[in-house]
Image (tube, rainbow, N blue to C red; front, top):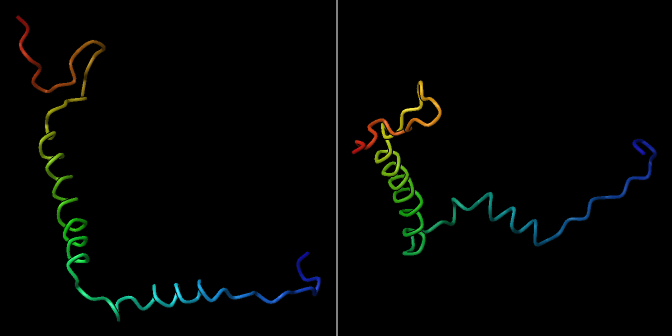
Length: 81
């Protein structure tokens, strides 16, 4: 229980300590390689651009206000023949 005086020291794992040191100091050793540049471009450019394209293409496509059961959610439903 807490405060019983039987404390064991924490064992440090050298692999975890190396990983933590690397993670905390990655900005000091980072280099722009072809692979890193490709990953940065994809994550910082293409992903937000594709999300924006999807949002732009679906903007004002649906209208949820005042819809009744059976009525279309499309803001401009196709004309019935």
